[in-house]
Length: 401
Image (cartoon, rainbow, N blue to C red):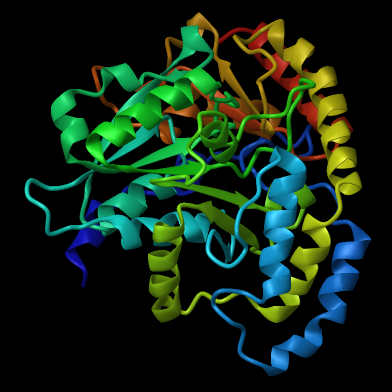
């Protein structure tokens, strides 16, 4: 067996399953889960129709690089959304969802033979694929904490120079999971300067970019680079997906874009890895990337939902409307003394509502776990169900520990 597998930690949802083991939730309440960030809004019919119409492509092996029409759909969306003109032949690639691509990108980029051991810098809290991808590529992980008092901005200044000198890859998530924070241009400028100085690649995970609550949409890493004159997107790869944008998590479809040099090598890796996108999935993807009305409708549903739920939870939790994404990242009451797993377990037992302990999404580093004393709530179900869950949480907190 690959000895690096022993470095992997249990996935948050496995830890949650173990936390709830032996608990029989109250039969007085139907189960409501806010634990998993799986979109629940209906898939638009036109995407299903395009998938069905594309089934004829199952008779042929798909190209790893994707057909020209598919790549043109990616660059067309980037032009519409961000005003960017990328080369569909050299600066974009299809991927089977951003999760698959995040993992594969690390395997492409990390030089495990480097001495001392290379480092991947990850935000903390974070999406656990960042950690697993780094460890299985033979790197160590340095966790840069998100700071609550600064709208959960990552404290890049906390990373020592000797760590930056060993860093080969930095994962960025904007809008963030679980915090919902969006990186402003000034933060991008700082990160680009560090990349220029130390030579690391930035992987920008942007799968939540189309769910936002303010009039100004979230800034992309590619968009930030262009604003700063970095039109070659050197050492930058952005990753995005249709899962959240178009409510098709089972389609497993997205794309990466950026530095043509990295894209070329990533294509080489993917050719051997066997990760070509099915032609039927490509047909559905082309349709989805070419339509914005269903995205606006989806965003309006989330805005209505968060407007109903957030004020209720603000009465009993340390929480506010995020910049973007479909999560609420909430601090629990002082009576629980920062024990977010105990809070989640008791809430499940008494009110049959599932939330994810924040400490499960972070690591102990730099003197503490930045997820401790917080919970993540995924408001992915319909508004009425999320509102009922919020009302139960209010009752739970008010009854006291």
